[in-house]
Amino acid sequence: MVVRKFTVVLEPAEEGGFIVKCLELPVASQGETREEALKNIREAIEGYLEVKAELLSCKVRGERVEVVVEAPHTPMA
Image (cartoon, rainbow, N blue to C red; front, side, top):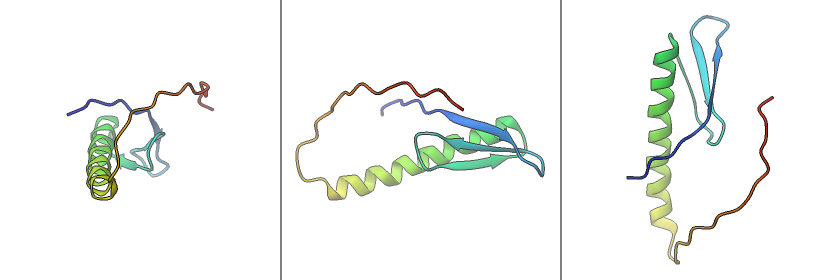
């Protein structure tokens, strides 16, 4: 198991509670409290990554190689 870190944005929802979005993945969730919203986004990210890994393992036939690149730092707006 690999541990990865993702950045999320936690915003108060107009109707109450919180909306939380992952910046690196197309994943969002919500919760009544800050803690619940963060727990829910963690579960949503884990679920997304599990499904993605299953799909990739079925499609990849070549050699897997890790590539490191330098990217500009993008400040949050």
